[in-house]
Length: 254
Image (tube, rainbow, N blue to C red; front, top):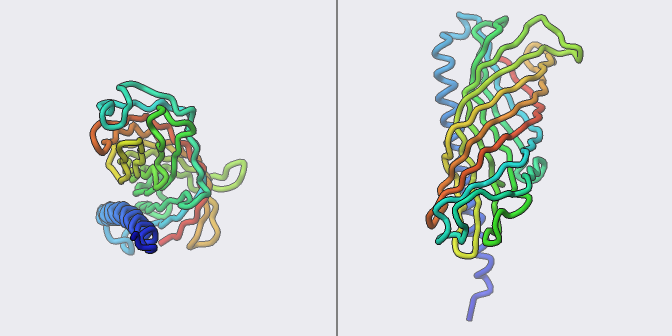
């Protein structure tokens, strides 16, 4: 006789594994961010002596990705998909569904009036295939994150006010992508965080001072993410993503 607790135990196991995977990514990302932030501070010297300025930022928002084909290779046996490129008819993002779109950023300015600054940025967005690329694929998504970790260079314009108020800025960044890859067929399943290559981004935004310790901002950003993921059971999945973002956030100044 099968115990009535078996489904409950199975659900608990799956939930625990998912939580552990998410925690594993976040721990690695925050560790890299802390190390990069420490290097940034070391480069700038002692803050109190140099008059430098730091920002710790949290933000939310939404993303959108235009159509991009997916390429399978070496997956004919493991997933029943012949080598080639396939359409997904675009990507859904579900930015406000759980887990929501979020980001964390640390920025360093050599002085409080510096025009150039630099820092690190962790971003979590999601992508779901609108249409399965092949009849043998039942799931293709990055619902636990099309995650990126970037080193950014910023240019701001102190004393300049835009037509909409606020101080304008722009930036560029280079880093890595570490998505949660989810690909399912009748015979195999990939469900894990992977390092899938480099990523690049460019952004433009407006900063609004709240007081001498806090500011708010709005930002438009586009990312280029050429992803190459390994499939469990054999094969590869390749996608060149253009991931566009609109973000709103607050920063604490130090």
